[in-house]
Image (cartoon, rainbow over all chains, first blue to last red; front, side, top):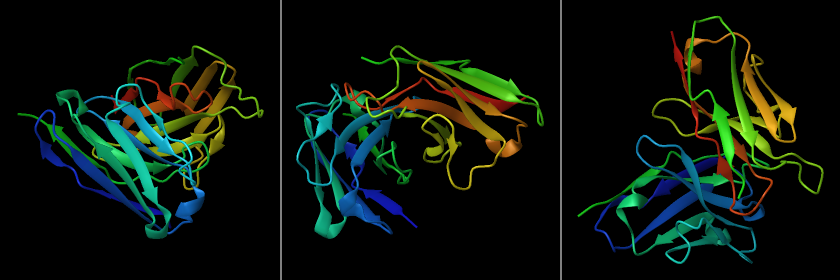
Length: 116
Length: 114
């Protein structure tokens, strides 16, 4: 059974940086597009970024473009999200997930709080 | 950009009664490869999202058959034939056809028991 476990969330000041990790197991990680989604407190779901198996091209939401970087290590079955220049509005639970067009595996989420 | 619009946003339902959620997209969701990447997700309180229906009408493994999806083009519907207590939560439609600006969700429909 596929399992995704996020880590790295926490409290950070505006303008600060944080890196999230997602450890995958139970499926062929290196064959899947992987994505990050987020959900601000009391709000809906928002796509953040996607990376293909080869890391050949990455896609980002306009709200994070230029500030966030998605990457992966297929040898370690791990997905990452480097977040910099964080803003109060980046406060959210961040989920990693497989490509929703073809699969359905989500992590439990990790909370990022941006506050002074 | 593709805009997904759900209605209603709040859905009080009596146990055992049917429920229906509508999702409309601002553009056709038929992909050039012939697939329609419109999916439905359930998010129970305090839990991660879970996909219920993929590509319009296909139920995910373990999803009760009281859930069904239908539609085409720009208009889609999620139906629950008889609502049970465990169905409480927020339901989202999501499109994955148009990659600008990536996956986009509807606003969510909060289902509660009357």
